[in-house]
Length: 311
Ligand SMILES: Cc1cc2nc3c(=O)[nH]c(=O)nc-3n(C[C@H](O)[C@H](O)[C@H](O)COP(=O)(O)OP(=O)(O)OC[C@H]3O[C@@H](n4cnc5c(N)ncnc54)[C@H](O)[C@@H]3O)c2cc1C
Image (cartoon, rainbow, N blue to C red; front, side, top):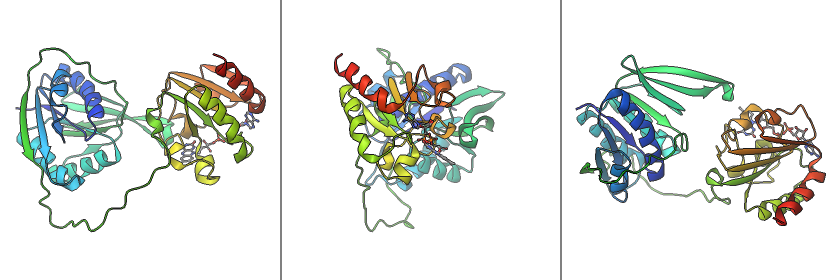
């Protein structure tokens, strides 16, 4: 029977996709299923709206192992829609599944809806300057970035069907000889609830020490614009925010000397409360901010730090 399916190797993201899946279920009238890579949260998925859960069991975690199994499941289940968690690995699996099923694929969708027997999606293009609407025929494969949707609320006493599927890698063209993990210096700021973001308004690297005092006073993580990490190398790359960096959605985002170019704003504009400090009253960051302070960060920063430390 045709259905709406969700796949992510990240269980939290899978529950976010279930929210998008439930909206499709309401309009399409088809059951909702989850393809999971572990059995840890089967019951949480069912409580969050899944009518059926497949658990993939395999010996290795390479996308090649999962793509074949996912493609087989959506074929067997005659899936109308497959929503895939838009992580780096998720997009890798998505491309492989699309190639195996010979279907189209929309990546980084911000909205997904069913209309005229097609799936309509929106996503940002031209570095966040425009929103593109696309329509794909069924079966539709769509990747959705983390935190685009809130996690689906669990409901008590829901029942669902559970199956286990072998996801062993049968593709002998790929042989893994060595694995070198990327050593990351920083924490994952994409999940931080408070962020102090510095831009090129900061005159020198040594001044980061003063910024760190504010960061500590409010229990935040430090973030930056691309120039501070890629050009100046003052902070690691995983701390820069924007279209080519991290997408963040904290409760509080404070910017210091950040002009607010669209490539940066796309990565932080969903923050709940945005406070911007910049000397230029015409800086675009103020259009995105809830509170703006037109002033020199070297004057504002100590005052802000003192005020927050005394809270
Ligand atoms: C394809 C592409 C992708 C990109 N991706 C990203 C991305 O993911 N993330 C990103 O951040 N950028 C990205 N960029 C770069 C982006 O376009 C901007 O150049 C960058 O965001 C600007 O960084 P900034 O605000 O730190 O610097 P600037 O634009 O130079 O702004 C510095 C600000 O500091 C203010 N200032 C100066 N002195 C002080 C002071 N003493 N006190 C207070 N304010 C002061 C100035 O008024 C100014 O507004 C990308 C660009 C391209 C072309």
